[in-house]
Image 1 (cartoon, rainbow, N blue to C red):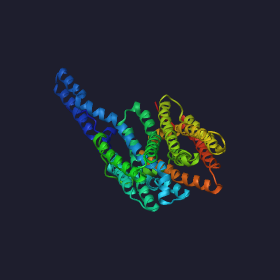
Image 2: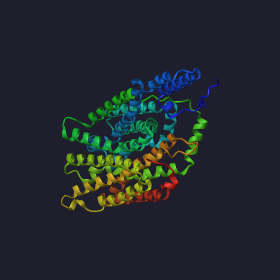
Image 3: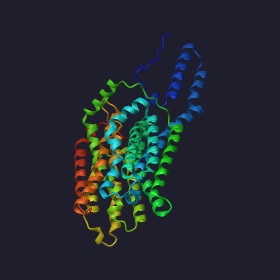
Length: 462
């Protein structure tokens, strides 16, 4: 009797095969067993016994590991982003040790984005070649090495070089994690998982600024070099956790002609560019303001202001999670982005334009507005990241979309602190900084209004 089994073409792999070949092979063998038994006329009771093996403890354990993988990947993103945000809480001490100016501090804050700025699309080739999980392991290893070596820096340029090296590691982690979350998460939980993933920056700000403030301002015997060493050790531990808990996906021999064709197809489509620029309009101002918030508010009480800055970052993490839930409940992506951009215009004008130093308790009003700025603006990254994993055109590449988006928004992350400090230096204060932030938010709002309609996106987030 001829077999009725339909075979998948050799050059295509299902998401399950890509993420966990062993489990996929086990299901294929089980299916083949069903066909052989049916052909041989095995009794129904035996067929039922074979089917029951699908619910064996071993299978349940595999499924449990897969269901938890996105949580570990979220942890990778948080640790990677903590390397970016370990600097603001230590910046005052580093400036004193290395004798940096305000503008040099802006360059140091932004230089960690240079790797992503230059290599975003190239990173997608790495992930295609070696696999998503391996890409994350490489990225975490680079972060660990960069932080450990950076702790030995005696000159500003040495610290900048190691920060740029860490930036490449950050790129690899944040490039590979979203597609791997998409593959290893059940369809009904993708919006929730991506909403949580979008919170990784806010959570990282909260943890990094909080821990650095407690260590550097609360414990006199701790210096910024020890904080760098601690982050290097944490990243090394995350490498072990990823290897033990995240399902293996295998890279493939990269056909550069077809790969570049997929990248070219992606770059020739408008939507990846649109969401990348919208994201950049957000990161241009959010990263710069959070990075310099202690300086913007003032250093009257460095410990208290540091803790408050951590709360501001934590508000962004909470806002991202809420945004993911709103998407799942059917809220329009365009509406969420518009609310986020308009709120950034209003709150940044209120942060910078008034002379809060002449108002009793003005610094606390300023910090409260900053919490609102960070929390409501979180509607933007969660929404855009969720769109990004499904917006690749036919013949395009999800990795290319993520690489493009990371490259564009990290360019904004690099430029933002430099522009913000340049304006402050030129006018002798922060009071005109709202011009930059409002212009960026206005551009993002216009793009969101025009391109993020349900008719254009044609995708479901439920």
